[in-house]
Image (cartoon, rainbow, N blue to C red):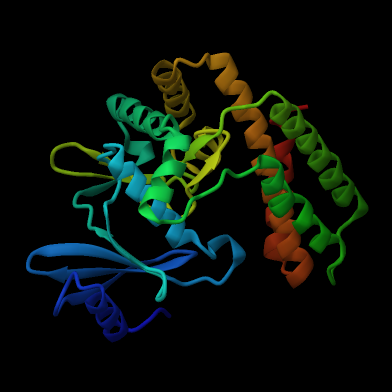
Length: 311
């Protein structure tokens, strides 16, 4: 259970944005509790820290920095930051009015718009972002090294698996080790080619908010980062697009970014393999620490999904 409505009201008043607002619970995510703050026909989303996990340590502060820069660069399809409190770990953004539309219900035109907006974010100047953060006195987000991410979500979790109470079969341990090393080799080769690092949405939502004017609005940027790709492989795995819709998305992204389909599809396959293997390791870690059959079932279901991506 998150903070009380009374507590959220007290904190929102501290922001100086509102004086006597109405507070309503909105939603609960992995990292935050979300509320609606309403006063004088104005609505705000109030996001307050929930998780103490390392991955969420500075997620709201990162979201604040990214959204401030996006607005500075004329991006009009993301929330605008209203207030951020580093002391109380909460963020206030404007409330996005409209209808939540799932990716599976996108028209071809909306798929093209989605691809165009992904490219607009990915193509923003990261050096300008670093200078912007310094001039504004806000947190400067450094690029994420894909190899470091592989260590966090791959090798480090694998160590937990090997040293946990419940032991996996040797064939599963061997499978994880072989595929982790394959993924490491691919990323080392990619790094040697000086691949482009730029903005990535991170935890890409499977729904967007479309307002009465047809504007497609992206939200939830606590996992945004400066990384090596626009997140197409993440969308393929965790999104709601059909196979045909995803194909159209990649084709649209190719058009907007002027990148070849061959290059994009190759990157998607390798990135998907990395995500799929890490998903197996997550299930293995959960089983090895809890012994719950639910996680073993997930593990057994995920291995074939990873195997069919690449040899």
